[in-house]
Image 1 (tube, rainbow, N blue to C red):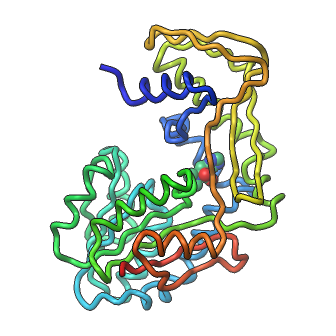
Image 2 (tube, protein in one colour):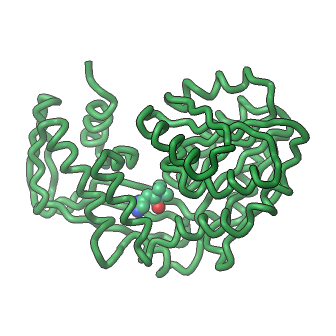
Amino acid sequence: MRSGFQKDVDKGLSSPKKFIPSKYFYDQVGDRIFQKIMSLPEYYLSRSEYKIFEEQGVEIAQALPFKSAFDIVELGAGDGSKTKLLLKTLNALGLEFTYRPVDISKAVLEQLKSNIVAFCPEISVDPLAGDYFDILPHLSTTDKPKLFLFLGSNVGNFQPAEAEAFIQMISNVMHSGDLLMIGMDLQKRPQLIEKAYNDSQGLTASFNMNLLQRMNKELGANFDLDQFEFYVHYDPVRGFVNSFLVSLEDQEVEILRLNKSYKFRENELIHTELSRKFNEEQIERLAFRTGFFVRKEFMDPDHYFVDSLWEKV
Ligand code: AVJ
């Protein structure tokens, strides 16, 4: 049986416009590179959202309409370093909630849970391991009101139609009055955005190149890393940061685990990631089309990033 990685690599490298889904960045090596990216001076995203939770936790708490105990369901929680700030503030204000982080990896969830408990032992944490698509339908069976979190501009990695479908899927398990808070990176000075993905240390380049290394390790491929280079471009008209690996020569790569070879022309691109940047109009429209209205927005002082709080109609 073929793994998801095998299927997706074969599909992406057989397509006329080659691509590899960006979710495959995050193996152990990729996780570590992403940690370093987050502390780059150019990579403002994480710091901006951190500031929002650090400085506006009380305002966020005041915007929650729940009168009784509720669930906070976080999709793609990661290490919880930003969320825990918010949870601590909500707890300190006497709100009664259970934090339910959802992640595909049990190991990640255990780490996250001990992180949160160490930071604030009073918070009750009930992790849910599994795929979003399997977990979401089960959540609607508990009758507590819910606040869903989808932070970190992870929504920016979806193509527009996919983003809408994903949010619609969340919306479908929600009840009227439930809330969804989505973290989104905002359109801003193009140079600033481009620099966040074209860092001087080459960390983002390694983050992308790790995909080739991962195929070599896990799929028995023979990518020559010297024959590819990283290229990133921000299109301010659409608000799209597109990342690519460029083949530097005509070459053929063999992938043993797929029993197949793939040809690359000189200058042919492999699309590796879309990191979308949003404007206010797009946010309003996305909310409206998926069954929400925008209840309140929380931005960092520079207005680089927004955590947009939506209420289910
Ligand atoms: C974690 C998806 C928000 O798109 O900015 C960082 C990942 N890619 N540098 C993003 C990423 C290149 C990041 N997200």
